Length: 227
Image (cartoon, rainbow, N blue to C red; front, side, top):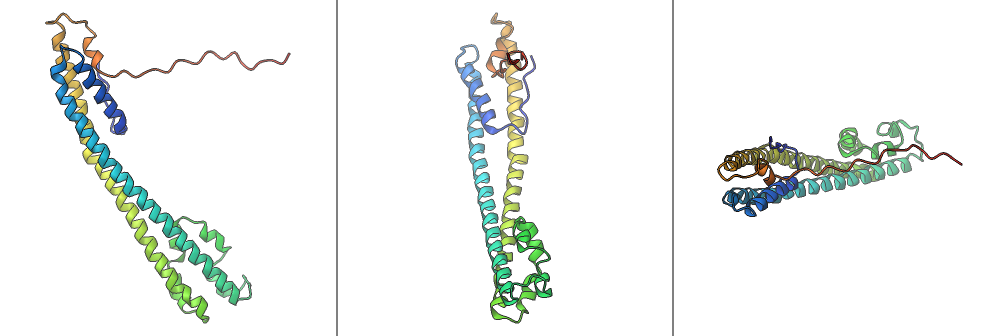
């Protein structure tokens, strides 16, 4: 039997379950219990990795929350600016001053994701600062502050995603390699004990968790016919 390899994309909970099962089976068999400590050590490692992974996930969730907050802040400023500009223009959307910022309904910009919306409004603060009405001018500083906050939030999200990817490529991939090596080594060691101890040929396979196959659905008889 070839022991199946654990893939790099396998969830750590699945790897943990495989290790716990093998350790328990080893401890339950007097012919193999001396091999259990190596798997206990791997279980300790996977639990530490799970804790580290949750820390990375928390950082990503917090970063996404920051992006969402910055997006809402930017939307509020753009919405407020559009309303203030329309007020001084007598609600005339055809005027060049309005079309300078909004070629379409302001909602079209507000509905964009943060990164795309920043791309649309990044050049506005200087222009808004040159508008003749003070209430409209005030939105220039507000928009610049929202742009700065948005850029920071996007940077935070990129950093958090990079840290997670680094952890998987370095720590988790190395660990999975170690787990697969330990499982293969264990199988080889168990195989050498079959003959001398007159054990069943499938004895080495019993220490590895087998996938449970889902039962096949009953054959379809087709849709019932009306009577």
